[in-house]
Length: 247
Length: 232
Image (cartoon, rainbow over all chains, first blue to last red):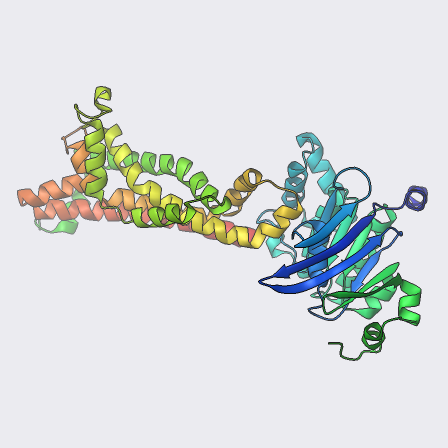
């Protein structure tokens, strides 16, 4: 198992995850510009943590990148051919009114996995995320932490090249937060590009490879994690890290 | 004592009256078939209106909602005109058969099932939409998922449709003709006995009908509550 992980690590350093590029992307709704215009490229190994105060446009940025929203200006593009396989984990996981394992087999069915392979893959993912005992329990009666782990397991079976996470731990207790962070690292080791929003500085310090800092719908900086936390360039980021209120 | 409706109802049931049994069986058969057929078309139709945006969609929703209140006699008249000898489907010779009654009740129930399932599916879609788009699902792929996940609410919708079908008298009377032993159902028998002046028998039949509808609803309620508790 260790050698397998080591191989994966090697693989992820050899071929960096799919690159994402925003070129002059802006999003407005009812005449009000909520984000941008902003341009940046995610080419490094990541994980990329999108940080900023509430209403900064973090969720909109994620949704634009994932294609849940279409930019009103500019372009979102990916390296390689076509749109890479991607998945998203939401703040409040959206789970189907079926058993935990059926939630995973449904996602696999949507992705055209052959019927025979689905259940095995689903059970493997449930085991990885510590949900084997809950396989036949309805997803809707799982605890908050279990639901979020199931959402991660669903993303896992899809083997995405890119994983978006929108405040995935904001409603969870410390043990559940730890499980989510472990999962995020596993995705990262598998070579998945991680783009995650959080307003938790400590979480960002634990996970980030690079940080995109947003405030008021604008990107104020995009720097490697170490320099972001030790010597932020922008005044807004300095205030944010110092725990001041940022407009 | 013989004039007491409950006594009549009880004795009808106790004696396993053959004529009554036939009437009850035909009532259930016609209404259940009509509701089943209406569900097979109405649920996907409702889901489709919930999922797709097209010109005139608002008009379709208003029409479906309005048709929920379609008077049974109007549905009966329409089907009568279609199936009568001179009508476009006259050759089929279906008028005054149980099939004609199924068609008439189907017409009555279809808007109810379509309109209510449209509403329920749209609510569920509001909750699931982002996840569905994230999974890369097409609208036609969303439809079976939504219908399955709405199964408990749709069961209630189905019961509303069944209630409408089993309670109406105007449509089955017009296209069925209340022929003894062929197209007589509970409601038309009640109308007939009332006009003949046999009020205890009419009331007795009414009690049997109510009890049946009650039992079916209770069964469905228990099934859905048990399932809901398990699925959450």
